[in-house]
Amino acid sequence: MDTTPDTSWKRFFEALGPEGYLSETFTKNTDAEVDFVMDVCGLTPGMKILDMGCGPGRHALGLAKRGLNVVGVDFSDKFIDFARSAAADCGVSDLTEFVVADARDFVRARTFDAAVCLCEGGFALLQTDEDNVRVLRHIAASLKPGAPFLLTTMNGYRTIRLAGTATDTVLDSTTMVESWIQDDGTELKGRHFIVPELERMHRQASLTVEAVWGGTAGGWGRRPLEWDEMEVMFLSRKVGINTQP
Ligand SMILES: C[S@@+](CC[C@H](N)C(=O)[O-])C[C@H]1O[C@@H](n2cnc3c(N)ncnc32)[C@H](O)[C@@H]1O
Image (cartoon, rainbow, N blue to C red; front, top):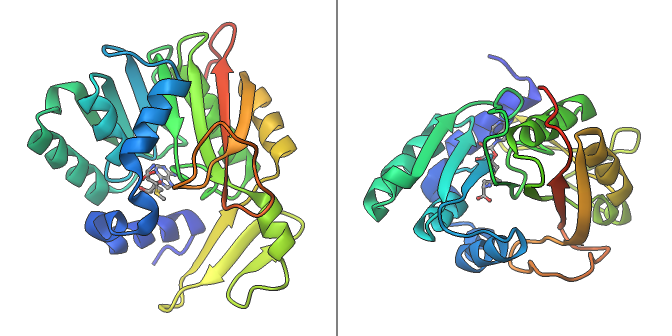
């Protein structure tokens, strides 16, 4: 059995399944989150948006219901199958395309008016900075110049402040990768970030950061990041000529 960390995450999400995932408390603010994305990204019906690491498609479907053309990408077949049939149930199949792909590989040059990567969708669950920057570069390459990108990911300030106090997780201080062992013995790992690291990674991907806010599910807003909250939010914009993947 392949036990590389990325495969472990795929197996984790497939075991949880779309219904299990959508029963998690942090998924219960989707409508408000979609309205927030529409607002901060300046979206209007007819625009085309990429949802990287879309999971079962809760944001993608909300965006399609508001008239956007959405491409959702995820490496879980189960989540993508669920998103496709949910789109049919909601009558938005013609506005949605769901693609099974690894975030490190997906790119459609200069196609999108905006992109989102929310709640660690295809970012941060990859532990090397090379892989995480690769995802940002592909997202940037997929955006039209000037298009916005909204990311929420793990807030490393909180992780550092809690380091040494947790009984079930271990933070590697040299890599900022946190790991824990599940009941079945599988190890899961996630990269946590401090703000200047994310700012540098965005810059490496030709994305100019416009705002850094608190990004914890249930608490999105144009407000400062708090030291001890779970997630940070970055609003950036693709500038200049698209980078080649
Ligand atoms: C915590 S869920 C977030 C899903 C969705 N963005 C949301 O907010 O509900 C993380 C998602 O990222 C997907 N994912 C993780 N690593 C990925 C990768 N390398 N490529 C594509 N999808 C990935 C998982 O399958 C999962 O659906």
